[in-house]
Image (spheres, rainbow, N blue to C red):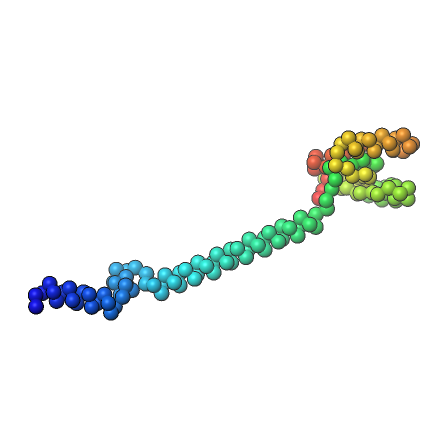
Length: 152
């Protein structure tokens, strides 16, 4: 037989019986087992990343749910540096039947607020109604919560 035929037969036999992993290992490339192990490792890392993102999202939603929800506007009935004075005024307003919301301003004042509303017009209308009824605290005003003067 000619040497080319023998070489061809040997090459064909080696391909049939040895597979691609033999040649990949000769060339320094990863074998199919190494490729499969890397794929599994990547899937595990991706699952851990997705799980971490899901836990962070759950924590964000829990923190958001725990944060108090404020209306856009409040009629402020008093602003006090001494917390005891704010509590006393709050008790008087609750005794009159008002639903009172306490806000703490970042500069250290305790604010006694009533009537949370979504529009400024509604808040001012309520404030003027209080003035008509004879409620006349020395510092009644409307606070817009988007100003972010209060602590959350």
